[in-house]
Amino acid sequence: MKKIHGISAYGKKLCRIRIHRITAPGLAACLLFMAVGLAACQSAASGTGEQKESSADVRGQGGTGQKDRENGAPEGENVQEAEASQRQRDTPGTPAMGDGQEAAKAEKGADGPGTVDRWQMVPEYGICKKGEPALYVLDMDASQMKTDADGVSARLLSAVYQDNVISVRVKLRDDTVTLIPDEKVKDILKQEEEKQKKQEQGIYTIWDDSYFCIDSDKNIYGHSAFRDRIRAEKKAQKEEGARAVTFDRINGKGMAGLGFAQQQNSISYKDNGKGGYYISEVSEKTIGKGRFTLDEPEGVYELWLDGFKEPMKIVFKRAPAYDSLEDIKGMVDHEGFYGMAEGRVEEDGLRLTTYTYSQDGYRIGFSRGKLMATLSDGRTTELVPVPGEQLTTSLDQLSGIRPRSIQETLYRIPEGAVVTEASLHAERPIVISPEQGTVLEIPVSGERQPLDMVVEFRDCRIYLNGVSPMDELYQYGTDENGTPLTKHMAYIDARAEMRDADKNLYYVNAVQPEKGREDSSKDPLKTVYAMADMAGADKYNAGELAGFKAVYQEGESVIRLQLQRPSYGWNQEFVLPVQM
Image 1 (tube, helix red, strand yellow):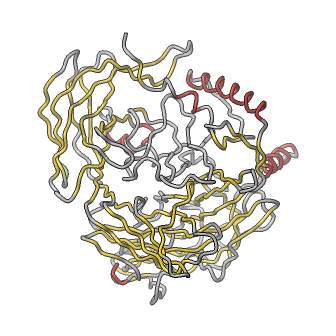
Image 2: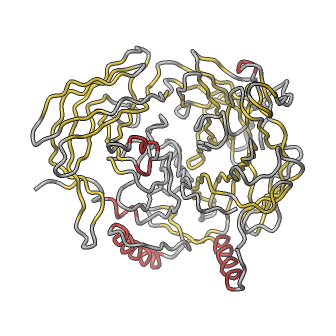
């Protein structure tokens, strides 16, 4: 009897957390094979303390969530980045960037009208290459950036406009959370287990949004009076015959009450120090092309959020532009990788934003770096990141800005201390290649077969030496009778040889594209993944590549495999002075 491998332990935790928007960028390469509904679950690696946050288990239709190794981050680095790939939900303080920040002039030349032939620096979003449409950013001095309701506050983090696309980022704090009694939680868990079984059988399931899980290990669940109030208001509007219920929206010249498409969401539940919890949520909302009627934003725009009686007011200004990347204050050039860091002191701590750029398309991550701060009393100390407060923007609608090229992290400041200066020290940062290998066809049978295949990347070679059937079966769901649906598994022996002695292989993505559908790998929700086996890997070490676990159907004689986006530990130290 073959052992069934896959989602046997999936149901128990999966029933604990509700995240109804499915994430794309979080699906990268740690799971076996089947990419399905996911809320990218990557918590900050250090500092649990008082902060209680839910792990982002996801309700999917036949698979499990997948950790994001593609972005070069070890497990546990971005928390609950629950991206809304369900775009149908069409509901509707930036630090100075240094001296000499004159607004960029729109060039009318070979690039076309309205383009800027300089590097544009877009706070909170990234570095825009030359020759792209002009960008407009939040004018903090002219904008009203906060609004309050009963027990809830919302703060505008950033806003950006480019070529008829508007995006805003908002942080919400909800202090109206009450805990659900233990007896009621038992009923909830039983109901969720029943619903999970139905969903695994392909039966359409409606989940109850009136509660949420705060701590799955301790079975702590809660209600939000704020969310209940919004739900009741929408229900009343429908009963009164309203043509449409209210939603997050923006008013101003060129747009009359346009609703947003939710782009990205990061939610955590935190100890309030009074025996209870509050919700901290950062959301990114976008209005796409074709819905804004002016060539550029003009005047004051009102951002209305559900549940608030007063809007936040947004005023845009041209993004600062520079002749070269080196002209940007604080920018560091380290062997072709550009990076800068800026810090902003908030009521919860120091929010650090890192910006990166490289001409060859590689990405570099500083999330494993140490933030060293000098305090007002002269002490130097390492600041600890706050769990649940890391967000890597994945907005891909801004032209000229590479997605996932910035990362934000909130750091806790010692009580009573003031940070006077800081620097980020990244020893052995992770760099991620954009390369993709060719699709390989690997024969598979009932016995081991030798292989002689090589995949060439710029910084390494990966040798495939053999393929063997495995005893395990991969379970990807159940049928209407509850019988497991399974695929066969094969182990592909592999080893890596570095071409760059300064790097070591950290991870490599492996996908199994269907014949004739190679482009499906660009859509994580339709991609079948093989899992790289990194022998000896733990939270401190990447391990060494030993092979890949792949799946195939009964009767198939070939496994199609494509290796993509290898990431490396780089034996360098990157030091970024923080612009405060």
